[in-house]
Image (cartoon, rainbow, N blue to C red; front, side, top):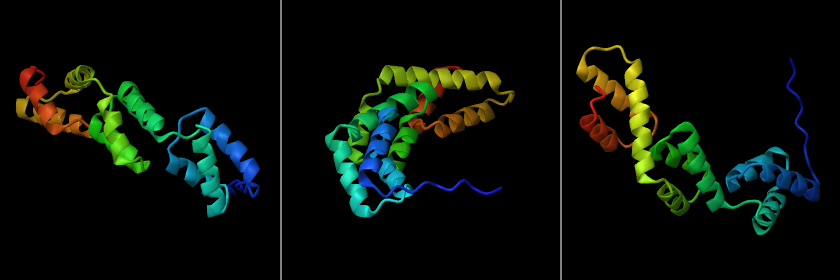
Length: 161
């Protein structure tokens, strides 16, 4: 089956209106918007002009995006700081904003979420060997983006094994 042809936009005003609409229903990173504009077939000068306009009109805001991304991935998906940081780096958010966004996560909530995730996972494990269970729980915490030291500390203090 043929792929649907992508519509190319050549008019900068039409692209700006479409970009504003695209940014309205969800916060976007600058690079994400830039990629979308290139996908629409715009030239580099037009892309940069539109990005500048979107920033001036507050449709694009990297700090707001980083905060929303961090909040969403932590609260909805239960991701750890390492995984959130990697996600923001993939979106090419500046390191300063990544650091500030990660500081918005409350430490007590962070630890409680990790404990909850580990407790749920522990209930699903069938291994009777305590060392294997601990290893699997640590690996699970790492895969969710939590710091190895924090996961080890929680596993040590709580009897999840």
